[in-house]
Image (cartoon, rainbow, N blue to C red; front, side):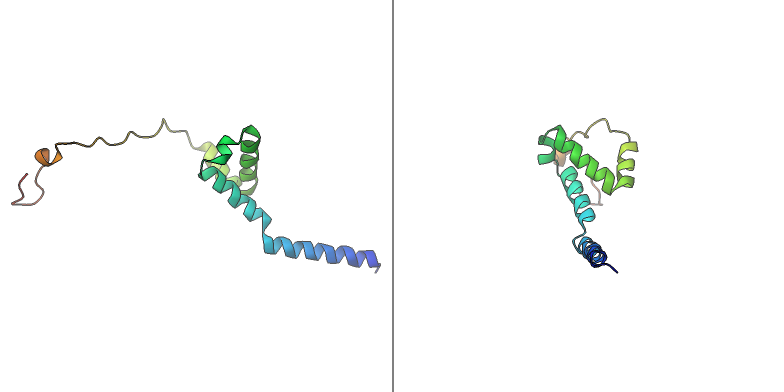
Length: 100
């Protein structure tokens, strides 16, 4: 066995060990999910940053990305419920003997 073969094998084993310990793929996926979930800097970062985040998410979580793309968009957020200022006077009693 040539000395360079030993060096190549040792380097490959070391790189595999470090990749297993550091888990760069999972960290990249978690970073992409955090960026997408918390609409902050990635939205304001421009098209280049948005493309990088979306690409990282598609590469690290393809099933989730496919499910997101297949889900139809909603019409928008539901309006907040309107609070009745005269609620106590208009409510119906729920227990016997309870008066409005």
